Image 1 (cartoon, rainbow, N blue to C red):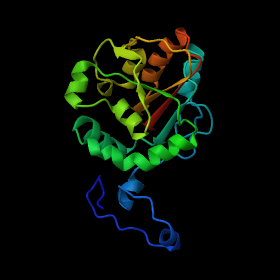
Image 2: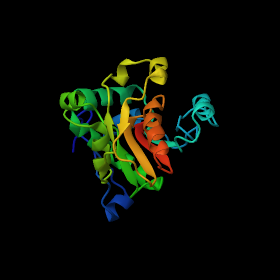
Image 3: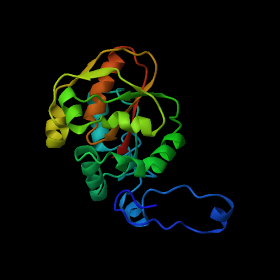
Amino acid sequence: MRCLLCNEEIIPEVSWSTFWKPPVEKKMCAECTTGLERIDKPGCPVCYRKDGIRTCEDCRRWHDTNPHLLENNTSVYQYNAAAKELVARWKYRGDYILLQALKNDVQEKWVKKGMKGQMLVTVPLSVEREKERGFNQSEAIIHLLGEKPVQLFERTHNEKQSKKGKKERMLAENPFKLIEPISSPVVIVDDIYTTGRTVRHMASLLRKNGCPSVSSFTIFR
């Protein structure tokens, strides 16, 4: 087996435990695994930001201006240099198979947080953007979790969030339209939580239309 990220051969670990029980198949080598920094103990309990020991300034500001929109976010990895390179290859250069390298960690966090079986809502792309990429990253992650994507939104305009700075993102108009209200709790799934604006745009529409609870799950924070 070769690493999906760097193509180096993965040498299976041999121990008494693996002798009696087959090891979990790894799709990343040790070096690439080390490069992706897992978030096991988040600093902020709301957005899963790693640094700090309490609710961060951004989340306090969100609570003051738009309270009770998002219950919390859960993420698997820190969005560091290695993560940025992986996302660039997977999301923007069409190397779709790379998502499989993260499967074990992503599914482990999903189950550990007790989210299995919940209603998972996709973040929509414009028709042009999805055609350009060839897939919707939100749907791809939900399929990786072995769950069924639920589409409740459509996108009303097409500006790339990756091209915007933090201030521009925070001031941006809501780009989503709710096409199907829901009266049960949901989890919004996406690849990256940056400022939290995207999930809160969606959460605001859900909450105004009867949804009792909105959380989010992202691979990177």
